[in-house]
Image 1 (tube, rainbow over the protein chains, first blue to last red):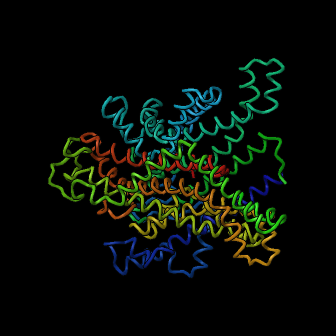
Image 2 (image 1 turned 90 degrees about the vertical axis):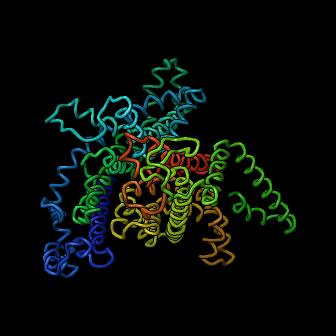
Image 3 (image 1 turned 45 degrees about the horizontal axis):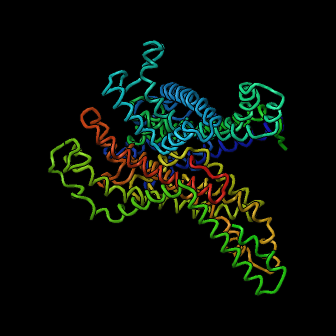
Length: 315
Length: 308
């Protein structure tokens, strides 16, 4: 197992290196001169030369590349063109908001998906199961940003229960204000995510409930509650762990769009804003960060999986 | 799927005539069984009916729309009425007509992107699975790299580099979904490569291309159909998301995502601009997901999912 973990670790490092390389070439792939694109109407030959020097674009490609990889390793992703801050500072200001949003979305998704999936599996083919399946189908098919707008319409515009947009710092305004502003966006992201998880919980539990050891447990006279909770559920949730990792991409992508709907300046909104400003260092930094988070999260999920399921041998 | 695998077995025994008859009979039963299975899948039926209706709307859009999509003399932000079933937008245009025209754009982007992803991903997958060794290593690592970027992020990045617009949006979405197709086809090819019919084809001197496209290819149709159905839906979702962010197709083209983008600032005054285009997206993607899910059950395909 240790060997497997080491191999996965090395593999992940290679993927991250590949991502950093791709992101490096991203700036160079812009058709025409990226510096002219970035400066836009403020273009003068002097400003272009200055920016080219600042970005290191006047160096040979190999020098640029080694410098970029070296800088990435040190966590130095360059400086924003539009504002004076460094890319690391911009990410540092946005990341806590995005992570808060992602964490709450994840919590909401689990709270919805686990009980619904379990009940749907236990009461297979019942009205509840049917309705849950239909709702899950709709949930998967719904753009999270649209659901966010609908939530604003209902809870902020009509009922006036919650604020429509913005973000409150937990340290400044307290937990309640923080939560109040995060509930709607988290629900917008969490709903679609819960639909997927619910389907996996239901399918996983159904499979396990039909297995021999569950039948044995029942035959021994173990109460149904214990059969489900102690025997079936623990095993049924193992594949769900993998799904959580894979679908993390959905959660991250969801935050990018939903942040725009709710005017939360997390990394997603920073990314979209930077694209409009043609602030490429920021674009590069945020995209690389998201890829790294995604790869690392999947690595962690894979490692956790090896501890959860002792049946699997990794050669 | 079973037809091709049956061929060597039938060819082994009896006269050629008998073998042909047997194969034809088997094909008939398999075809009949497939039809029966498809008919039994309510999801396929519901999904297909909705898609056909929407496809007709997409094709005949300009003739079906009651008004010109750019006509703007109906009064701004008018609520839904008999004349304007979905109301009017902030420019005074008929939302219903704009959404009918938008159907074509959403469908075109979804289908073109999914088809391109299928073509490229399919070729990469079949090459990786069939040739194995270094070909597989190179392709698989490239696919791993694509996979490391969430779809929306990758599409946003590509649009950021190459600019918005119809063609670039299609390419961006296609690139983002290549890895899904490549993985499915590679996995299937790996097991099909070891089947008897592949060995038999090789024994009678079939070339690599013949084995890949004539013998392995037909067996990939089922999983690819299922994945295509999901990918079109995901493509439509991604297009609407990109357009909503202002990174989609030309802002002069009426699309569902654009309507949502324009309606965002008027949520308080005009709910209809935000509700109807979103419903159109949900219904379309839902229909494609139902179709894909039903086909997966009917064709007994594993390992293909609608969640990207």
